[in-house]
Length: 120
Image 1 (cartoon, rainbow, N blue to C red):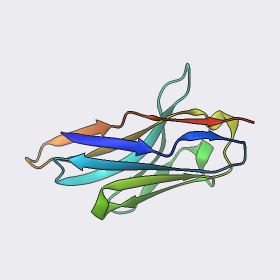
Image 2: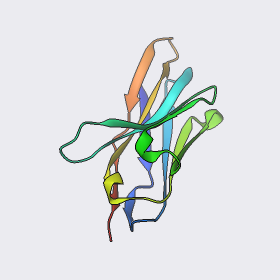
Image 3: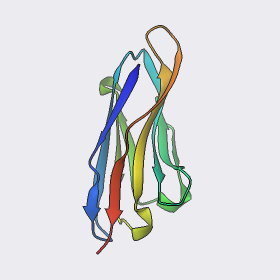
């Protein structure tokens, strides 16, 4: 099994910044893609950003220029630096990782989620 643990959520004023972190642990052989998704009340979960182990990234249009995803492949960690936060960024943010475990089976794991609230 592969476990993901997020940290760094909280309450921030509009225009503020937050850094989310996610650590993967367990039976990991390799991680291909790590990323962040979010789900706001009454809405479907959506991709915020992801990054593969080669460094290629994808961002939702709504966060381009404001959010930056980074990875520490050696530590199996992924980060999301969120700047210029807006009230519409309020959501539960979930970490996701996809790869191979130590018996070379595909895994697709999710963290428990961390709440981000942008409000004055």
